[in-house]
Image (cartoon, rainbow, N blue to C red; front, side):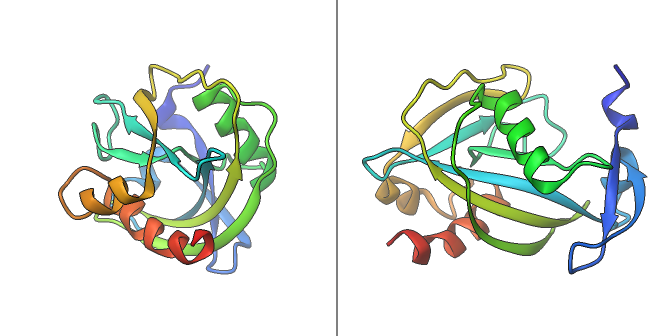
Length: 169
C-alpha cells in the first residue's frame, strides 16, 4: 500500500466539479486546495448521536470528539463510494441508508474542504478502527449541547452540529 501522505485527492470547485488532483500532503499543507470529504452522522432509535474520539496519532485535531465518520474522497471515486468505504473502514458498517443533509465549505488553518454531510439511523454492531479512532459512543443531544465550546469536540463538528440541529429537531 502507498504511504498515506502519497494518497491522491480530487481537487474541486465550489460546485463539486473535479478540476484536478493533489496529494494528501499538498492538500493539508496550508495550500487551501479545495478537496471533497464525506461525513456520516449516525443516530440510534432513541435520537442519540454516535461520535468518535479521534486517535491521538491523527495529524488534525487528535483526541477530540468528532462526527461518527469523516474521510477524504480518493481521486477517481464517487461521493457515494467514498461514503460507503469510509463507513466500512472506520466502523465496520456495511449496510445503512444515507440521507444527504447538506454540502458546505469548511476551512481550517491547514486545509479547505467541500463537505458532503449525511445522516442515518443505525442499530447494529459498530467495530471501530483502532488506528483511526480511540473510542466511540452514542451521545444524548443535550450532552453534546452542554459540551459545546469547551474544547471537547473538533471545531468542524461543532460547526456542522449547528447545521444539523434544525434537521433533527
